[in-house]
Length: 144
Image (cartoon, rainbow, N blue to C red; front, side, top):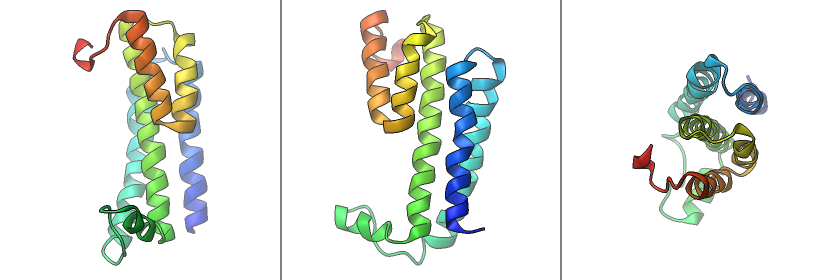
């Protein structure tokens, strides 16, 4: 399978999870299995494959922006980076839904956070933290 096909597969694989988080957040399989475990695990396996097959011969690293640029100069490692993003963003969105349910936050308040987490990761999480703090006075994660 080509890297382009794997990119399309990884990008498309997260969509059912995000749709379930937005439209069926209380269905027991949404956060327990599909969005919270199954999809991130499958993406994790793809990530493991990409790292295991390309990391050893790669240039670059994480010590400077220039090294990261060289590292992501390898299309397979660039794809690994993308898979990393989409898997963790979905996992974070799943956590947002679970946490909001525990705190009794209305789901419609969480939807904009989910959209932003899907599109811009940390910005969606930041919005969720702000809303969580303002609406439930839950500023620390230990409060969960």
